[in-house]
Image (tube, rainbow, N blue to C red; front, side, top):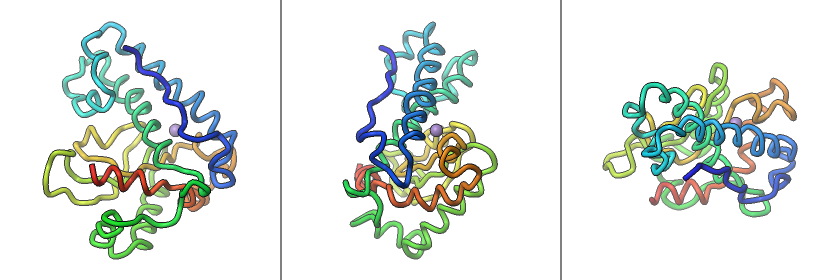
Length: 209
Ligand code: MN
């Protein structure tokens, strides 16, 4: 079984004007595709690993054979992170942007004071990542554990919070390839625009799960 590039749940232009069509198309068909291809190459001589999900591989990096561990971390992470990233965005016409509801809103209020404070804190973390990486809203524990707290966390490169035994609810790609065409070096401007396409329904679903 080979990993495959998942289809986007919307058209390349669906997130306009906040995330532009050309960036989405290159990001999905070139960047994400390359992570998938290289992950498959890395796993070629380990058929027993090809039956696992990418999340399972990332949660158990310590047990990945050493000769492919870095490749799985980078390309498996790239595949998992982007697969999630597409689903936590939605066209404003399809409900993207705005504020979360229900349990997630309550949890954000409890953890960060209120929603604007959460947004501000998340944006600052994302803006402050040195070089390439990701900002996350996550639960501090694996899915099956009790006593999780909501945390804002960042990872360098394509590292996944799953490898730190956290459970991701929302993610933001701050690699330059995610915004350079439209925003050039203005990462903070990209982040500000991105809030308009956040798919809170998906983050809520992940919290419930
Ligand atoms: Mn990316």
